Amino acid sequence: MSHLLNRDQILIAGCGDVGSQLGLSLVKQKHQVFGLRRNINQLPPGIQGIAADLSQPDTLINLPQQIDTLFYAVAAGARDESVYRKAYPEGLKNLLNALQQQGIKLRQLFFVSSTAVYHQEHHEWVDESSPTEPESFSGQIMLEAEQIAINSGIPATVVRFSGIYGPGRNYMLGQVNRGIGYPTDPIRYSNRLHRDDCVGVLQHLYQLSQEQTLAPIYLASDDEPVSLNEVSDWLAEQLDVEITDTSARRTIGSKRCSNKRLKSTGYRFKYPSFREGYPQLIQSFKN
Ligand SMILES: NC(=O)c1ccc[n+]([C@@H]2O[C@H](COP(=O)([O-])OP(=O)(O)OC[C@H]3O[C@@H](n4cnc5c(N)ncnc54)[C@H](OP(=O)(O)O)[C@@H]3O)[C@@H](O)[C@H]2O)c1
Image (cartoon, rainbow, N blue to C red; front, side, top):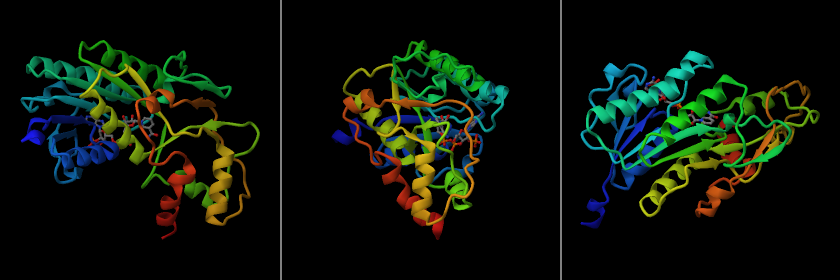
């Protein structure tokens, strides 16, 4: 009986890679999970699809009558200002309006944001209280969307993910496999989060939200900010290839993301650094 009492109705808007894995793990805990996206035929069984376009308010009509928790995990499909606007601030606003118009009251909202909101580029440590003055449109638009979530009147938590890596995200592996790595100078720090920890963090915070009020923002990144050249050198060693070309470049940003606040809530990373997260990915890349 007790598990039935805890059976929540959960909506994941932008139910893509992270959203679907999160959804499946919530379904396992007996929650009812709805996944909203434009192409619902790609949703795994167990997640109830809602076909809608968040940038088109007139498509947001068939929402479930009750939703306890909303995860907003939409990703803009292209690096374009108007696409970003539609995916983040406008999409979120449209969905919150639709929920309000349909009399659906959320208990908790999670907005998945990104560490692109930080402007720091001199290897500074950043945390949830660090200034955010991004020059990029992506960072500025994400900040706008964060504010919409925080000022929504619903208990809201923003989760800022750093660079996601994991199954199917083989860009750097492919590059290193062709002998291309990052230079030691200038040094560029990077911050990463395994896809399974994206899911783990959201699930952990969701669980915590049942017991206590969450902070408005959590930075989610693994334990080890690391220079890009250290990662590419390590990958080369694992792949047994030689770096012959250090022309790989990242032109903006070099910061180190602190996960202290997240870890103080009791979260333990499945993959504390790239050294633990990459071996499985290397295996499947080789096969
Ligand atoms: N990639 C990174 O390194 C990184 C870093 C920091 C934060 N993040 C954030 O992490 C989250 C999860 O990313 P992910 O890798 O799971 O992304 P993903 O697999 O690309 O999933 C995003 C989903 O959003 C849906 N979507 C996009 N526009 C939509 C619209 N107008 N209406 C309805 N659905 C829409 C897409 O489905 P349809 O195309 O079927 O609509 C897609 O399923 C996102 O919030 C992203 O911003 C990513």
